[in-house]
Length: 87
Image (cartoon, rainbow, N blue to C red; front, side, top):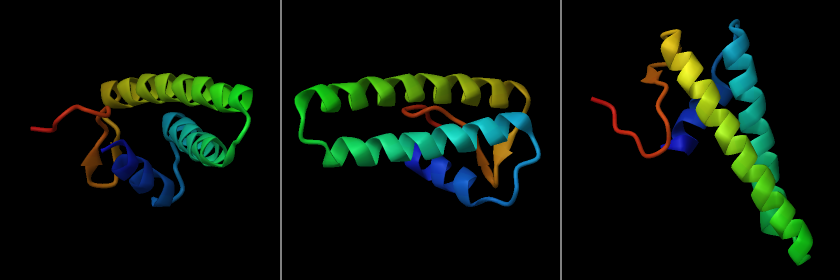
C-alpha cells in the first residue's frame, strides 16, 4: 500500500501544498535509500541504510498524519499509512 500511495504522489501534477512537497521529498529519499540498501555490501553501510530507511518511514507516517488532518488526498486515493485499510 505504501508503494502505491508513494507512486501516486510522485507522479501527480505539481504539488502546491507544503505537506505534499515534503511527502514527495521523503518518498524520493526513501526510494534512494532503498536502492542503496539493495546494492550495499559492507555490513556497517547496510546497517546505516536500515536506520535511514526507518527514520524516513517515521517522517513519512508523520507527514501522512498531518496531510489526513488537513483533508489532503493523493489523486483519487486517500492518504493512509502502511497496513491501514480504507473504508
